[in-house]
Amino acid sequence: MENNFNTHTVEKLGQKIRIERQKRKISQEKLAEMADLNRNFIGMVERGETNITVKNLEAIANAFKMDIKDLFNFVL
Image 1 (cartoon, rainbow, N blue to C red):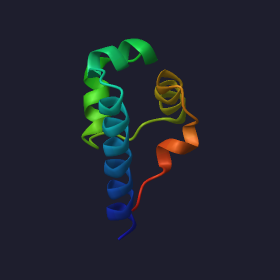
Image 2 (cartoon, rainbow, N blue to C red; image 1 turned 90 degrees about the vertical axis):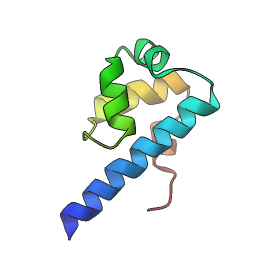
Image 3 (spheres, rainbow, N blue to C red; image 1 turned 120 degrees about the vertical axis):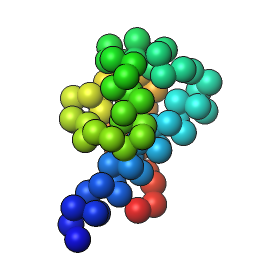
């Protein structure tokens, strides 16, 4: 049961990142460049295919010029 919850959370976080990126009208490639991450990795995160580290999550939040805690503002 817990594994499903974790997977669901990872997917929701990825969706939130995609929404924030699209609101800013930037591509995955541009976000990757801004956060100093790989574009393929951004895609995997947005699709919920990988569990992101706090370090990389912080890099994305900084690229968005937002607080890292605001990336967790979604309904589970």
